[in-house]
Length: 425
Ligand code: AMP
Image: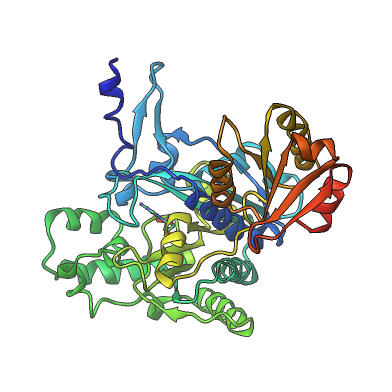
């Protein structure tokens, strides 16, 4: 391939490269979104980025956009039908079942994950074809306190980033006892509407999905649609009331959203979404709910479960929209400038020693004028520059320059590591 051709490559549509310095914020977002779950007994799980396509068609649902339109399907040379994962829950549950985690101790099995997901969506700001999520799943327990725990952990996660302009939408989708009657009432209602062919077909497979249709023309007709809330059985009502009570008692505000069904078919009872007001059309920054039937749908035993996924890319955009800058430690604390060959040898060894002592240290590489090297020191964000030429070293000192005040002091080479450690870098 010619060099000319190579230079024309760009990242595929709907994807983007994460580059410094923004990538540091991204890492910090992943870290902070997952920290509350890690403190609550959730263990880290990692699954393959591709799975048997049937895991998603069965698990996520045949009537969802995610499965019918957005999945990256691939056939391997060996003839296996795979798909890039469009979401995390089905894979995590598959992995837990495969490893029999649900038989190895007390339930629920609590897991968290962080990774990239793939949907062939109409790409726009905030909606990508590869995007990052941090997720948490609690498998094998039916307890409103567990639903409340997860919602509170997600809320704590967003708050820990400094986000404020978001709302929590909450709904209950009922269960296999009360949903059929509601479904029938909804089907009867939808039959009287002016819907296109595709929406009609969708209504036949899963009428609840029509409530989730974002188009104005459809939403305008749904004002009088029967509400699931009015059809919940006593058990679901009590369960829902308990979740709400726990949220309120623990300072998490929510808004009722009777139309919230979300884009995946596996949800039962509690469903929720966190929406941010500064992102335009793509307002969901996270969401989840209870999925009591999913395990059986993918061939496992009955394992009532609940979980969420929080969007990393959209959290980044939400921070931008609110003008919040994360307080990140500088990548480099000390920047070392050696003047001359001999000084370079001595200081290179000091750089290694400082790094081993836990001080983030960088060094001017290549032949640079002192002016250029000091520019690099400033650009690195380091608090101190360490400068030494052969004459300093002959006297057993290096010059330590505070890059904020400009003040420069000689420090004994032998005491360098302790001196810098004392400055708590
Ligand atoms: P979902 O599985 O659709 O509920 O997604 C969970 C979260 O992932 C959403 O609330 C978004 O924050 C994020 N998300 C989903 N799809 C995309 C996408 N195409 N681009 C960026 N973020 C996304």
